Image 1 (tube, rainbow, N blue to C red):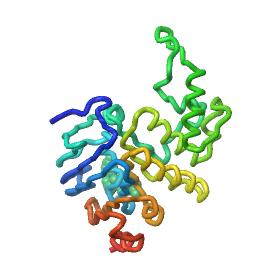
Image 2: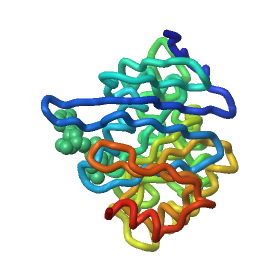
Image 3: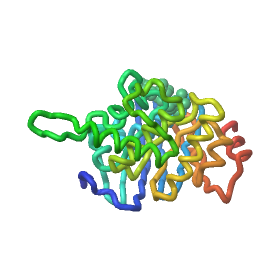
Length: 252
Ligand SMILES: Nc1ncnc2c1ncn2[C@@H]1O[C@H](COP(=O)(O)OP(=O)(O)OP(=O)(O)O)[C@@H](O)[C@H]1O
Ligand SMILES: [Mg+2]
C-alpha cells in the first residue's frame, strides 16, 4: 500500500473506489460500491436520506476507513487515517452546516488554524496579509468584502459556503467534496453558489457533489452516481441521461 503524502496530488486527479463496504454495527451503510471521479468534472452522488452518500464521502475524505474494498488516487492505493491526512493530500470537504464559525471574524475564518505569522517565535499573526488575502481570494468568488474584521456570522448563507470553498482552494485542494452545499439556502443564494461551483471545472478541480436536488444536480453535473440503501444502482454520464430518468431510477 502506498501512502499519499502532502502535495502529492497533480493538476489532474482521478479517484477510484472499488467494491467498497462499510457497516455500522448491523447497519450495512455501503455494499459493494464502486465509482470513478475525474478532475474538471462535477461528479454528483444522488440518493435519498440514509442511502449512504455521506458515508461514501466520509471514506473519501478520511473520516472513516472502509471495511473492505479499494480506494485509489491516480492509480495508487491510499489510506487516510483521519481527515487531516486527506486535507494535506489535497482533498477538502465543505459541509452544509459546519462551513464557518459565526462568532469569529471573516479573515480568521478564512485562515482557521493556518494563520500566517509575522513572528514565528512569538506566534504573532500577520493580520495585514491575512486581511488582504481574504479580500483577494473572496473576490475570485464574486464576494466583495470591504471589512474582513466583520464577524463571519454576518455573511449570508451563500457567502459562507463560498468562503469555505475559497479557503479549501487557497490551501491547495484539488479534490473538493461538497455535501449538500445549497440545501440550507434560498433560491437567490443557491444560484450564486451554483454559478461558482460550475466555474470550479475551469480550474480542473475534481468536484464531488452530494445532493438531494435532482434538477440542480442535473444542471450542474457531468457524472451521476445513484445510491440506494447502500448500493450503487446507477452510474450515468450526462449525455446518456436526463433529470427525469435520474428521478425514475431513484424512485424505482
Ligand atoms: N457513525 C454512524 N454510526 C451508525 N450508523 C451510521 C453512522 N453513520 C451513518 N450511519 C447509518 O448509515 C446509513 C447511511 O447514512 P448516511 O449518513 O451515509 O446517509 P446519507 O445518504 O448521507 O443520508 P442524508 O441524505 O440523510 O444525509 C444510515 O442508516 C445511517 O443511520
Ligand atoms: Mg448525508
